[in-house]
Amino acid sequence: MLISIVGYKVLEKIETTKAAEIAVLQGMLSQLTKLRNHYAHTHLNLNEPYPDGLSTIPTPSIMKDHALTALKGLTAIENELIREGY
Image (cartoon, rainbow, N blue to C red; front, side, top):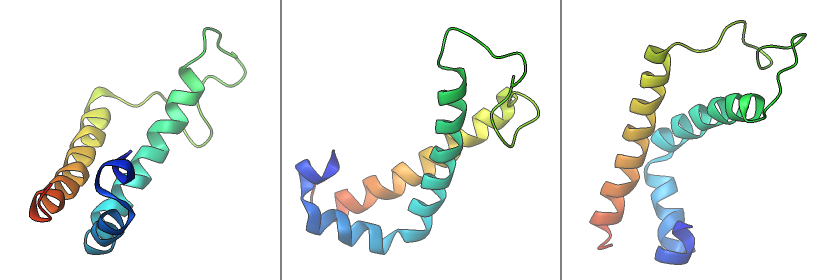
């Protein structure tokens, strides 16, 4: 969605400048996507109660850490957009 607002060139520049923060954000979002996809349905398979690679449901403190990671990544992107004049 950002591409339609700021353009490909600006977004590519931000991705280069903040590569580490964006990589961490992408990794965390991948984990959250796995959880969301597993639990987003109205039925549960009792033979597979947890997503692949997990043996429990993440605790609230872990989810809070994910939210803080997202905040750091999104803030880094926002700061670069502000620096670019957006």
